[in-house]
Length: 127
Image 1 (cartoon, rainbow, N blue to C red):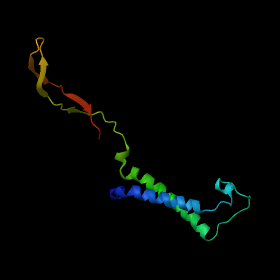
Image 2 (cartoon, rainbow, N blue to C red):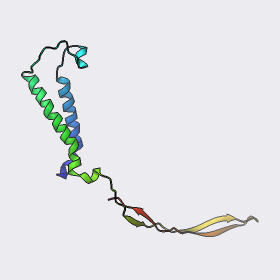
Image 3 (cartoon, helix red, strand yellow):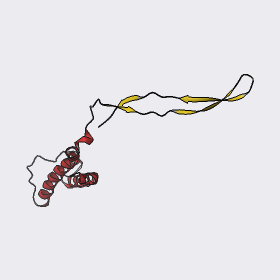
Image 4 (spheres, rainbow, N blue to C red):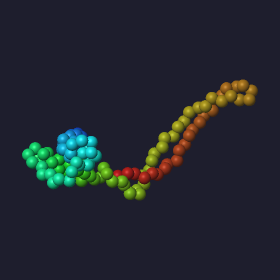
């Protein structure tokens, strides 16, 4: 079932576009008032033919869209949860050695050996 995860964003985009088109194709009323949810009358209206099919298809597409959006949570729940584990693991830090060029008070340039030592730290690991 996890093999569908790479294709899910494309499926979601396609469903969103189809759902948007299906919603925009439905007629609510003529004129600008219909675009904002108003209607030119309170007459009972029954959908027939293509309008009924489009209305039902819009419902089915919206249900499929909700399923497609929620599906990753059920397929791979570990990707959507945060770890509350307090396990610690050692972190190895490197030790650096080298030389630094320094100038003495009489103008002489000397090389000073330098070694930077680090201590071992612990940190939390995510699972």
